[in-house]
Image 1: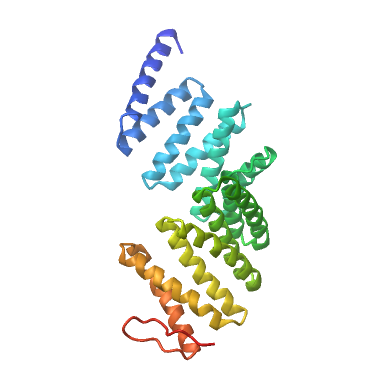
Image 2 (image 1 turned 135 degrees about the vertical axis):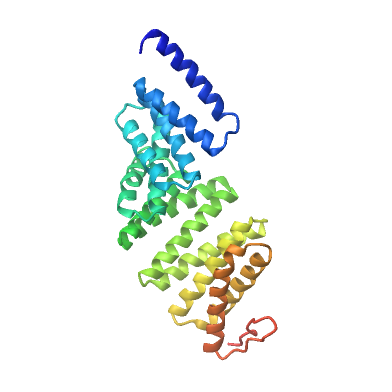
Length: 304
């Protein structure tokens, strides 16, 4: 750039950045970031370009454009990978890799997702960081492997994630960290059932239920209650698979009660899930020859 052009670019960038700090609409943010990216390309500023691309990816995702977000984050990660990074830039690189891998998982591109997620977990493992972010990245890595049909490899990643999440939750005593640990335990239990290990799943889900119950008793969030109901239902399935249908009954009943409460409180998005768990309860009641009154459709207490 010529001197006058450089001054104009700085002034233009300042104006565009001011747009982004003034509560813009998504369209305004998108247009400002596109202009910022064009200026950084012209000025050969790869680090600033990577930062702008990362921001644009999040805007594209909010606009309902996952492919465009993937494209932006892929370019940002390529730019950052090619540079010697200072600490803030290295942090951003890992975040972009996690964003990219997570979104690729969400759009069912397991093979593509594994590449950035494996890179991110390798960096975090080498740095010996026992953090919630590391645990969640391992959880995403497991999801990418499940999409690829590699169940055992996925379970290996999940078990490492669980060990990290457990350590973080015990150290912090933080409900969000405990909830992350519970979610990973639930994912392990689901994976163990899927590969035909219901006995292992029972042990995993028992631990998970203990964590979610503690969260609820401490005044947990609606998300904690939703997770607890899902785990309770999954535990019921695992108990049935190991030949203990009577033991599964109270867990199906608990799940239905929680789900009905959530749906009645406005979670209409859970209506289909409620129908599914009610069907599980009705099926088991029929198998155990236990009555299910028409007034509330609950099973009577089963006497074993």
